[in-house]
Amino acid sequence: MNEIDLFVGRKTPRMLREAGLIDVQTEAIARISPQGHGHRALLLYFAENLRDRLLARHIVARNELDDLVREVKRHIDDPHTLVLGGLFFQTWGRRLVQQVN
Image (cartoon, rainbow, N blue to C red; front, side):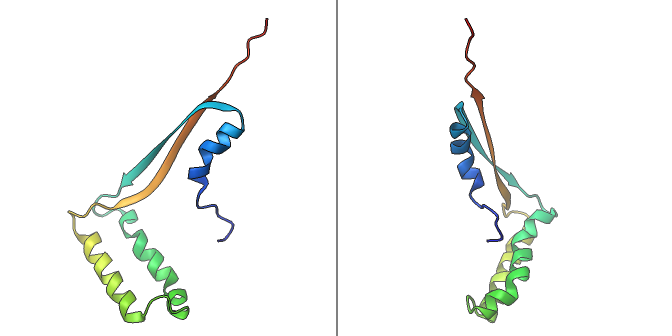
């Protein structure tokens, strides 16, 4: 998919271990998008960008997609709806330092 590795966050701890780091730890961080923040509407932007392809490939019918977009918009506009803007991975480790005698 456009040569983007969607699973790089999941693979990072393993890659760090393979590179020789020890005590590798990872935290997943979810950001919440408050009312009025542009990230709240990302799902709608994606739906509009993919609309022609979704319809052309018959993945969803036009009226069904329109209904889904309306429903998502209704939820996004509701200030009581919790919208996660994205999931981030913070990963760290340390190198094993060998002592020289």
